[in-house]
Image (cartoon, rainbow, N blue to C red):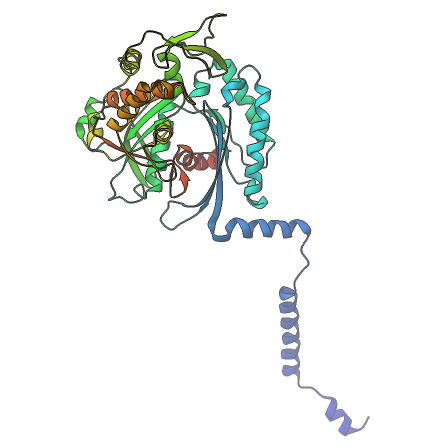
Length: 437
């Protein structure tokens, strides 16, 4: 090898070490950057995380098992910076009859529950189902059954729920306390109107008339309401970083269907003797019909020799209601929403627009009752109980403290969302389930 060749081949020692260090650095960087092919499971997990976190979207499912039917509410929420969620959408579906109709054959309730569950499954994206709380709360229909029969129905539903893809906790299937029903309905109304999340907003009162029970709930602004309220009528709770003190009470047995039975002289859960019938002055004299309630069919007949259908019916209603309802004087000054059968009977007698609801005075219910009771042919028509129902509503409202000139806002929906207790209950049980499952 020549001297010139030897000179050309020499590489200084320090630059060579720097060159090696650079190569190592580039190689390590490449290893860190180079993507790996994820497994099928990791792809699925990443997809789930993306969908779960995307826009803060989450869902809640509430089954309302009432005395006359079962309804499913599927709510889609997005999280906001204010702490309170934003309701994006509600899917609602109802079926009949209520769970209590299957008291003697609990297994037969499963087809209807499955139908509603399938609706929820189709509505909620697969990656979000396992984190979506599924809850069924039964109301007056099951409260009026024996404990054994009610529990068999609840166990049947819970077994079905546990085979679903949703989040099911210890308290997911149960009978709801009547007072909670009123509170949750109040939450729904004031959330949908924006008052609940506005500290300076005026909070509305709420009236709900179901089949087996009726509720009254409002936020008291007067000290006398607290001092005059019977024990158990004032309740406290926290929601959306606020503390609320509410006047709330549920009257079990004074829902419209249970009231009908009592007005006619029947007893809840007790069939008539063979050949016996209930005779009442609240339907057309001599008119014979049947009344199905809580799985029992009662034969009913209009009392003969009634001079004034309205006055005779009002007397029967008054006798049944005596001493059963507490008057709340503060309702005179409140803005009050009323729904369920209040809305339905106002719609039946054209007091409101069925699509948007409207304002109705107590005296409007009274006038509609007198009209229906006076018109014998109409009283015996498609709804032979309309005279009785309207008379009962008129009397009940006055007993609760509403004067004849008091206006109530009747609604079925607010901002296209059903005005029931279900939304308010969903807020509560979503937090409860996620912390106790």
